[in-house]
Image 1 (cartoon, rainbow, N blue to C red):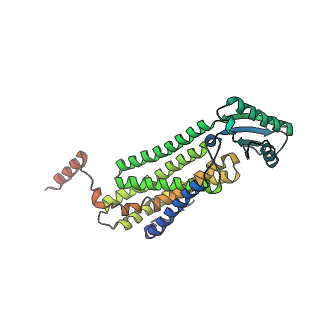
Image 2: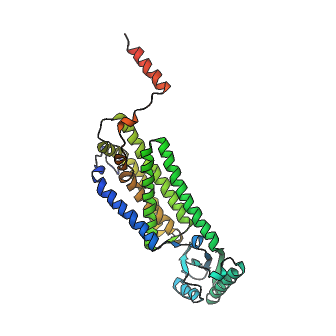
Image 3: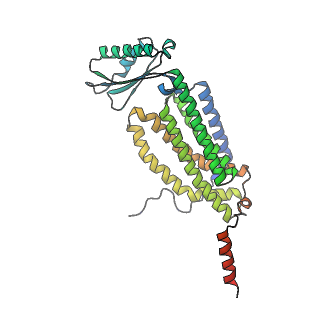
Length: 328
């Protein structure tokens, strides 16, 4: 049985030939993503926007009546609710924002949730209320702030690690690649107004981890090739390094997509945002490792001369032993 090879051996694709157009496109996409975030905003879930979440199951129906349920709850005067399937087709999650007078007032919030659940139970006798949770605006604001700090701290720590592990130019390149990946993911959520919750923060952290792993593999090969071929022009060396790691990159991404795409198509709606974020993150993370993290090293002045390794004690002993053995 022959092994399937997604990438042929000894590929020689000139990725760096198109580095300037791709960088321009990427910068435009980053600007457009942040423009969408600042103008349209993110569709915050209850975790970040505050409000109530009610989980309900329609025991005698195969599918929850989402349209009529939205009309019923919207008529109570608490704004347009966000209703999504949660698990099975007959299970739903109902999210609604609290009015200003109920913010910080547990009694008023409990009264509102009781009114909503009573209206649902009256209209649908077969419904079972599985849970009610309330998040105040103050707590949701703290969640947003902590999430921003978590993402920023993760990206900064990763950049410092790569700076120490390689050179400062590599740290800058990795940070820009991560910023690119996070920006495009946020732009997708702002464009399609998918719910942005703590689940998505976890997905973005997973994207950062994946992108970092792919970038470090490419950077490690670049560093090895810089030590071997110090006189080679840097664009040619970067192309060679990326081609040498291409099979591993494509196989890793394809393996993840084999698991994610069926979940994206057939999985429950409650996981759609999480899976969509990770799926998009795999594409942009793979792209950024090749077209963001590698080309920036040219403009930051990396050269093979800066990678002359310091001779350690072990290397010195091995060199002296070879010299003694070579003497007649």
